[in-house]
Image (cartoon, rainbow, N blue to C red):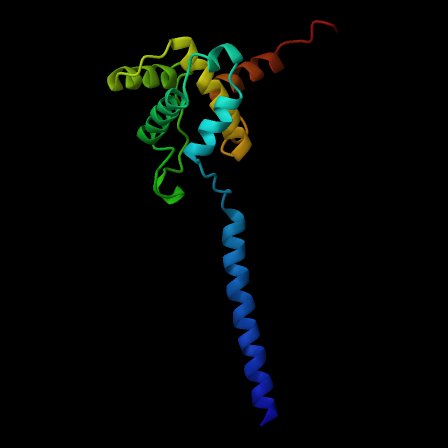
Length: 160
């Protein structure tokens, strides 16, 4: 009889180990989820703004810029208020000036008056927040950069 108890214990252990191992492997393969906390982001960004700008912008102004930028990211499908499963997994490429223009337009719609240069400074500080929470990964090389590298490789070395 003790053989059956031992066999049942071994089978239970194997089932548990396989199940836990599978879930652990699945979670390890997923990228770490970055959680954007608006209150934390406002404090982080406000603390890193230049002194002359902190005299002009309130925390509400900073919050308005950050929320407008969050709206932009959500419209592009790279952010969601709910969960990471709601966002797309594909590569999203935008021109460098598009987010700033979108945020400026959104602030104008909301009636928030902030100088364009100040918005850019706030967004630059927000980028450091994204880096701090791990939301920004490595830079992706595009086809244009690969073509330039291939052209450079095919040219003879000028020092030879």
